Image (cartoon, rainbow over the protein chains, first blue to last red):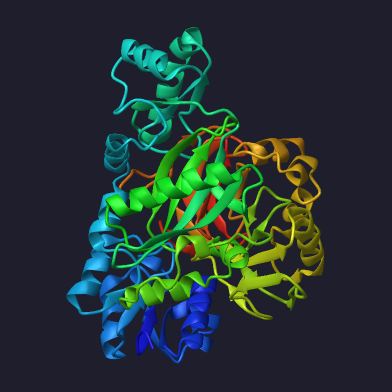
Length: 449
Length: 83
């Protein structure tokens, strides 16, 4: 038994997920819930539950003091932060340590190290890990922009330093376009963020978002569990993920995996983590960032490797050594996940909170449903819109696609709007079926529609 | 004869914001002239922000809700008087 009692500092489907692994490991569970989550599934499933505040996240699920108090009151030994909320908050990791609670994740120092993106980028460059070439800081003049663009090679992309969401972004294919783009991007950035500062990166054409799942124990042992392709994104939100990637061959997989492990080892990273890369058409890869937590899309990796990542996290945190080596990791078959959100895909993805009036969830061979919803459950507007992860496994990508189509057709829900109609359309798209996807796929797909 | 007015209503259940970010000044105030397509407020629901824009230009006559107040779908938020 890894721990006697574990508190889950989260809600929704991931809280349910963590409780499930705990049950299988004979670890007792404590759920925390806000005023509007009294009837939540994670509360029903946990052995104990503690109210930690009002609906507003800042006052409950982000309230470090209330969560630590709940752990002390219930005499929990460890806290799993899930994803989002406090999972990458170094103050929370530190608060756990100070209160003798084992934080299921990397150390506060690691969280801090990888959270500072530009510092992490610099460190990796010094290690010889490829990062997206570009300006080290904000651009101070047109001359400097030209210089950097010449160095990294056109096309280049200008990005606002003060914010994202597609504002203040301009692509330039040559010097003339860059000269024109600079004041335009800067003006847009100033209007959107009150900050005209820009930085510049090499623009990767048809980049694919490929990430590597790693596990590291507290004794310096590391493995990588294959890759996930997450190129189907809308405004930087992933909607469909798969493992393996239809683009990654064995040599590339090995290089990405070894790079990911090298990065983790160099910063002394322990527990589960994901290294994100952008990969271009020529299979050149560039390190983007480290996600120091379990990720939403971890089920696709679990399906193809057979490992329970949450269980591994708990064992690692309990000072167990990894029980397997890299050569025992095999990717078997193909897995795809659809993130079903409570939003109306037929009305600009407008959020759709409310009561579920009727519900039939998919099932059958090779279908996994990770969700916290149930019939008559009320989805409140206070938390994010992910309500269900529909995950399939097939022996081939083609079979996985057929299985997802079947599973999507079985999904019936009334009372709120969900993104199932959108997902169904993607699984009929020729480019998606051929695996010819990149991070621009959804922009094009939605404009065509 | 009363001047024509219309209400900006919420498209979704969520939280009303009159500022674009914490600490920022309000997007509009009573008495302010607004033009078509100006953003008057934001509604946050499920971590997604929706900007509500002016349909027809006029003057802000009333703001019925407070910053960060929870609102229901179709709730009246801001009254605009046409000029």
